Image (cartoon, rainbow over all chains, first blue to last red; front, side, top):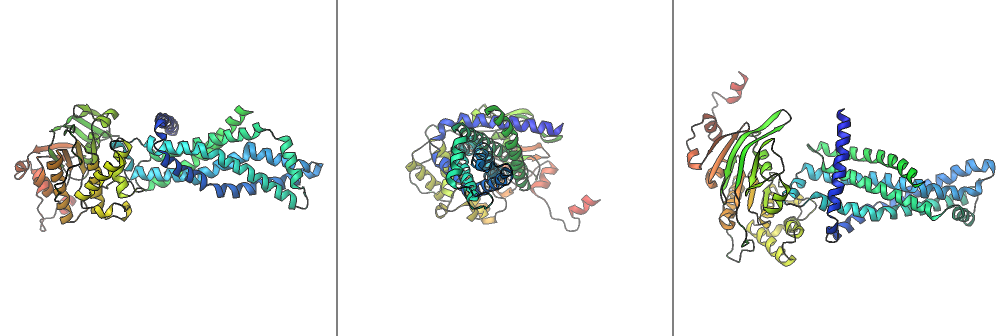
Length: 250
Length: 267
């Protein structure tokens, strides 16, 4: 019962934070320096790890597909399998998981630390709402950067699959044939669905991590607990949202 | 802390110190009652010092005045407005100097001070610079403008926190143990700063302190909280010979090595 109350309180405070942050949207232009800084932190610093991971996911997909599809002579369709899997599912999900681990945890740690060391109280006494100064630029930045991360994840994953398909003896498909199949079986909607998913995941992760950070109570030990909670909640949220968004977009 | 006779960039023609009225304030956290039916008022322009043993509820009372806590019963009015309402913070300029300083660690000292006027767009960047540098000059911190909080000593952090409050041109300035953890000379310096600011800027000051010298030296009135109750309220002169034995023990504790307190507690 206590846990259920805590979950409902968490949902309530997150929605409240969203509305508060949204109400300060007109101030975003004045906060462009913070917005750009957050774009750099959320997008640029996450990019290398997203690229590395996506390359290997695309590669593994191609390997697995090659292994199973060659049994019934369908290995020429590897390109479409890797393409669709990366665009519709793995690109946005992997980008979101990395965002939760790298950016979500950092946001929760920073805001929890500000809360514990009374910086948030100081902002409130100065009549500077944390939702405006700390949450809005991050939400805006993730909305801009998340599709970029997802597109990079898709592209690098596709290329990973193409390289492995060419240089693995049991598959041995030329990149031209790989990309030709990928293009034939994919439509723009597949990529768009993935981008919508990425947008939803990224927005939810940043909002939840901000809320957990801002609601931290207690001493320095709670900062670590807040980070763990933020990452765990984000990961669960990604998978739950994935189901509902996929169902809605099908 | 001498201030140069240059034009004071802080004095607003419309600025006026505000009064505070605490009416039957009680606050409980769970089953623990931290404040018990506190009633007091602070006049505009007054320096009011709140003293009491650790854990007596002083900082909680301060948080009620700036609206960071909501009363369980009773109310706190700042300039006649409900302190717990968000609108009050927009209408009355209040600055709280936290015990820890609560400086923004990711910002330089200069940006810590400039944050309030920038966010509220109260002046152009040149005027903000003038105000910030003047505040740093008053607190003898000119050389620290580009440093980050992590590079400052405890005393400097407290002075930066006071300077940050000053840049807000507050009508009500609250200090939470401004002289704790400081050496005697730095404590005296901070005490002089608080008294000087009151004279120079006509701000209402509420100071939570353990420091008897500070309280008796600069306060217009002193309130003493014990276990959440206001047990004494009067001028410093009245506190030189307190009638309440608890207040006398708190203000003028005697060190008795033959009959130490901890032995009394054991029995």
